[in-house]
Amino acid sequence: MTEDFLGRCRAIVGAASVLTADAEMAPYLTDWRGRFTGRARAVLLPATLEQVAQLVAACAGARVPIVPQGGRTGLVLGSVPDASGAAVVLSMRRLNRILDIDTVNRTITVEAGAILQQIQDAAAQAGLLFPLSLAAEGSCTIGGNLSTNAGGTAVLRYGNTRDLCLGLQVVTPAGEVWDGLRGLRKDNTGYALRDLFIGAEGTLGVITAAVLKLYPQPKASTTALVAMDSPESALALLSLVQDGCGSSLTAYELMSDFCLRLVGEHFPHLPRPFARSHAQYALLEVSSSESEAHAVGLLEGAIEAALEGGLADDAVVATSIAQSTSLWQLREHIPLAQASAGKNIKHDVSLPISQIAAFIAATDAALAAAFPGCQVVCFGHLGDGNLHYNVAPMAGVAHEDFLVNQAAINRIVHDKVAAFDGSISAEHGIGALKRDELQRYKDPVELNMMRAIKGALDPLGIMNPGKIL
Ligand SMILES: Cc1cc2nc3c(=O)[nH]c(=O)nc-3n(C[C@H](O)[C@H](O)[C@H](O)COP(=O)(O)OP(=O)(O)OC[C@H]3O[C@@H](n4cnc5c(N)ncnc54)[C@H](O)[C@@H]3O)c2cc1C
Image (cartoon, rainbow, N blue to C red):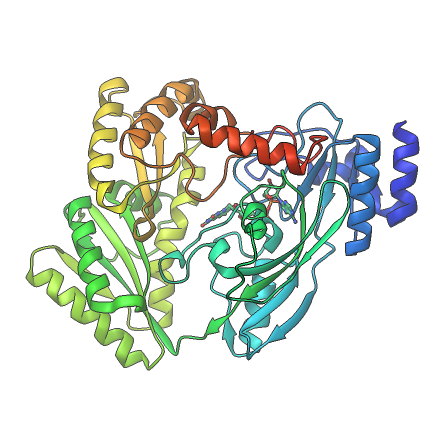
């Protein structure tokens, strides 16, 4: 049966685009962080919509599970197959064309395998902005961004990937093509099917193309790093800056002193903006459609008010693009510094913004009681209510040894998230990694509706089985 099936796949895409040798498949089977390597019957490399549709129909006919894959930068084991070797990996990387840019409708139409940076560049060449931005943008695909509803650094101003998408083209689990490539900002014609596929992590169908929103390029943007004594002050400053800068505030990131010390230890060439340590730091970015002077004026006005009101202890406002880049590098190097330090226990959580300081205090205390001396690496997109709340071992304990506490630590952190009405996955998704946690924390009625949708759209259960549900 396997040979018949693979023969059918070869007839559709050509033998060179059906990989079955272990060495050829290897780059598609291990997750980004190297935590898990799955097995697959084959890796399929379609280059057109028709090939995707025919391959999916062939899989449905032979009951072969499909794992859609984009850039493989996902962080929850969603884009790699399980260990059974039953599934095929459907790599979307060859469907990577920019199909259209409409500067009047302010939209760009792209194939799902287009790399995020390629889309940003195409928009910029047309004098417009595609605002989705994340550290994996040189490798991740828009199909993966849509399927995980990725967030990133500009959610505060522009929303997450769902907010940036107007239309989708999808190959259904039966191999039919749904052409929903519409560039409409208003379309109230029944169920919002587009929104079902966004964030579905490849469990409901294969996204093959999308119509995305474009925005005016800001004339200028400026960055500041503000030091303060507590998460409470960071929240008060966020309100103050939102009142003062309105929608010009494009990013508001929080970093604890421990995060910056870790970055300093592992990347000593990066700047140390302040003469002494402070408990917390906020990285702010303000952009303006008028001028650089306008952006700087907005930001400096808000920071002066914060310093005068005692919310901030100190601040650095970037005076050049190079300085702005180096302030952002401090934030972007936190995950890299953590990786250099060794494995740690990661959580990507979201909370009502007003509850964040209380959540941090309560969770820090619960962890300190259960694991005295453990170190919390807490940073994130505070303006979106999204924290990366990671836990590293106490001094003298090997990082690998500390991982035996993963389940107990997840329980402490996720119970607190639930107690504060938060979510156990803010932007990375569920994949295979958080599937059991989802069962524990999601409303049973909500879970039943999700299962009903999955059963209706994918009755054979071939789309990315074992992920989310
Ligand atoms: C360094 C780094 C920084 C990151 N920063 C952020 C961040 O700031 N914010 C954030 O939200 N995320 C972040 N991520 C994780 C983020 O989810 C991914 O980077 C990105 O959205 C996934 O895109 P991808 O093409 O790599 O998808 P993959 O990893 O290949 O796939 C992700 C999921 O989508 C499914 N999928 C992929 N393509 C399709 C398709 N065409 N149709 C249907 N299903 C599909 C897969 O089956 C899988 O379940 C980061 C990751 C890294 C490595």
